[in-house]
Image 1 (cartoon, rainbow, N blue to C red):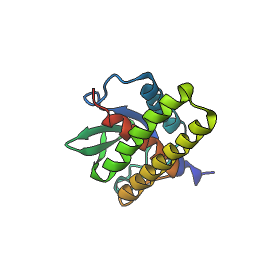
Image 2: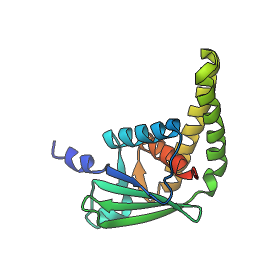
Image 3: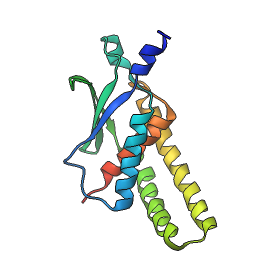
Amino acid sequence: MAQDAPEAKRRIANIVLDEHTVVRRSPDVEHERAVAIFDLLEENHFAPKTPVAHGVEGPYNLHLSIKENRLIIDIRDTADGQVARVPLSLMPFRRIVKDYFTICESYFAAIKSAPPSQIEAIDMGRRGLHNEGSELLRDLLAEQIDMDFDTARRLFTLICVLHIKG
């Protein structure tokens, strides 16, 4: 049981989206954001590789923002002390996020009036793009942060939410 204790610390305890990039969004987008944050905080695996060497095992508070076409992952301890700051270029995500927004618009329109088979087909495409973005996120952060696929999926959702401008 003692071996499980360090693993239980390797997680995100709280997440904050930069208020400068958070704007009022449609109810559908707000719902997606709320669900992603709730699910992320309920269950995740997140372990920065460098800070562990400095004795910080977690849990972590994350502050996410977008500045100059970079995702800034500000990793803090639970007392909000700076642990690490990881900038990540958003250029590799450009096509995926654009396509994801397009298919999400189609999905939200379809659930209002389309037949179930069409909704299911659109949703499969949406999940496929979401998975692609999640894998890309994990791959690009692999040297700095260890995270599981579900954590990457929820973080990818939040990256998409941060892309939305007012």
